[in-house]
Amino acid sequence: MSAPQVTFEDVVAARELLAGVAVRTPVVHSRVLSDTIGGPVHLKCENLQRSGSFKVRGAYVRIARLTREELARGVVAASAGNHAQGVALGAGLLGAKAAVYMPEGAPLPKVAATRSYGADVVFAGHTVDVALAQAREHAERTGAVFIHPFDHPDVVAGQGTIGLEILEQLPETGTIVLSVGGGGLAAGVALAAKSLRPGVRIVGVQAERAAAYPASLSAGHPVMVQPAATMADGIAVGRPGELPFELIHYLVDSVVTVTEQEISRALVLCLERAKQVVEPAGVAGVAAVLAHPEVFEPPVVAVLSGGNIDPLLLAKVLRHGLAAAGRYLTLRVSLPDRPGTLAALTAEVARLRANVLDIAHERVGVDLGEVAVQLQLETRGPEHAEEVLGSLRRHGYRPVSG
Image 1 (cartoon, one colour):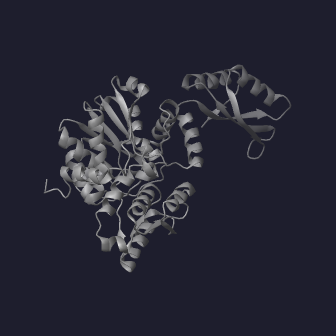
Image 2 (cartoon, rainbow, N blue to C red):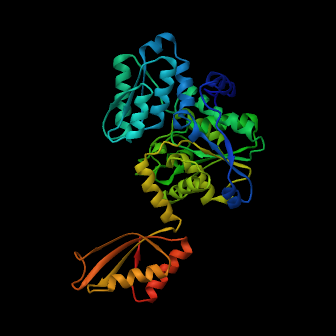
């Protein structure tokens, strides 16, 4: 490994800068996750951090180390959410003017929060890549300092302060599991934790639909992938950062991926059992613990990296998560188009103690003399859902779920 651009001493110095700025977020025990892996699992609640995510740590450290002249020129960033809020808050605390380029269609709560911290929000294109290009052009045109979301030593050092806190709060930690996008969080935490305890395992987690690190680690250098649509948009980064990649390559023990269903299931579990509101990108670590319990050596700390989720998206993800857990069943049934058939179907559903959330029927696109009925049902879990489907089949219905 070449001489690192960021060191353990940089992380320690970053914590001093963050004193009175970043919250020392709690580490809380999760009984349900502990039962899953057969050993203690804790949650590091960065969703309770100022601005709603870990991003303020790195953003503040980066801005705090600018010269007076640079601060006077202002800062600029591009983000669809958490980095925007971290930069806006950091700049506001340090008296610097901030411009944040956000893609059209960015979640309104994140736009409002960014503005509330004092930043000027500029909409640019429909993707973060377009916003990023315009933010860089703004920096060249105005002299403002561009604040990269993950590929800078100060940012990595700031995120690494989470690793210091984890090992102070739970010295016996065996594994730290956390989300990976560009890699700044994983790189910083791995650097800090491995410097204090070389034997601690670090596991990074990416959304299966936006996983640049597995291919990059196999190649030995950052490679570009085209992220597909994922609910975990906060970690949908097409190419790892150069600096984070080098640290992750040497210090992170493994990088695993999780599916959309696994992410939504984890989000529901955090909300329902841990009472923590977490965004999809922030819950990837928990998703991995649920999906691959054999990978994790306890005691485990899963970092909940952010909680900034649009309420509309939360409603959709909750439905998705309940469906993944077998508690939300959508099915379609064709019935003879005559009086009483719909009543008979709903009577059978009621007998099975499934709760009807929504029902719709249509005659277009089905055979003459039939009607298509779509039911959305609340069930008590996978076994109950299978019981409902099995009973309907035995009674002559042909339900199609999904």
